[in-house]
Amino acid sequence: MRAKPPDPRAQAKRSALNALKRAQRAADKSGIALSEWEGEFLGSVTQRVETYGRAFADPEKGGRDQALSANQTLKLKEIVAKAKGEKKPMKRGKGFGRRAPPAPVEVDPDE
Image (cartoon, rainbow, N blue to C red):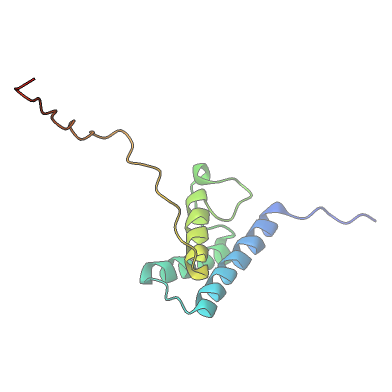
């Protein structure tokens, strides 16, 4: 008798809960204090995943078999990096903004 293939939703739920627990443990172990928002984020996302199996309702924000949306995953990675003491990546640039006017060129009247 063959075993049933694993349920992708259940796997995603377990994976997300484990990642959230690891992030909380890493922050506690390193002694770095998370901001109030980050602590609330971890708690609320954990509660929603345990209750509903996923932490977002809009299907456009993530796949059907994912427990966290793309933005939630990104924030979780940032919290883990903060807990590990890693530096934030360098900013890419300012995009399409105004450039500073060119410096005026001085001309000698004797020449």
